[in-house]
Image (cartoon, rainbow, N blue to C red; front, side, top):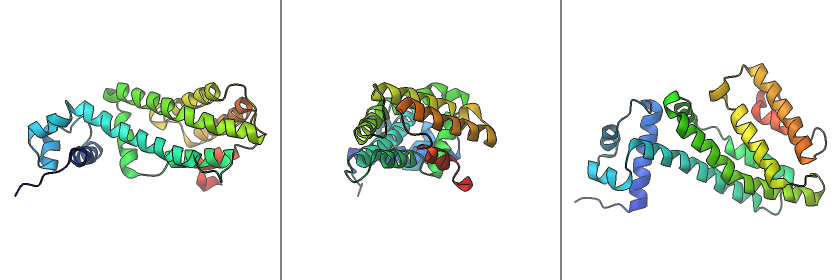
Length: 211
């Protein structure tokens, strides 16, 4: 008897199988046929959900971004947390160690996937900016931040951190990255009008072994 799965379950099954293939075999080498065999589905079933391998990769990346957005919204909605606590937890949630996620990011760093990588960075900035801006507004009310433009300030900070601190793009040596993270912490304090040293935890998040 053939097992009938609901569309969301089937779609996630395809994404899960494709993600493992992209990480283990490599996005460029993996084929639609590989995905079909991994899921044990017909070609028609695959094309009912996705038009191409590229569309599958986009969906996988988007799933990570949406999960990160949901985690950030849950943190922001917690009335017990102050602004600094929320920023710390949001950054931590976005950088949770995950071998599959790291493997996927490595695939995005390949030159063939540069456009897809750029789109993922843009989507991250677009979705996280209003959430973090809300936290900055809370910090202004708490008296720990002082900026006339919370959303625009966060957008500039997010864009610079997403790009400059991306090891797959620049491949900094550890000491170079450490200096840039420390400098970025100071920039955050200046841009958000925060007390000197109040973003020191940002460096510790990147280099916990040096804390």
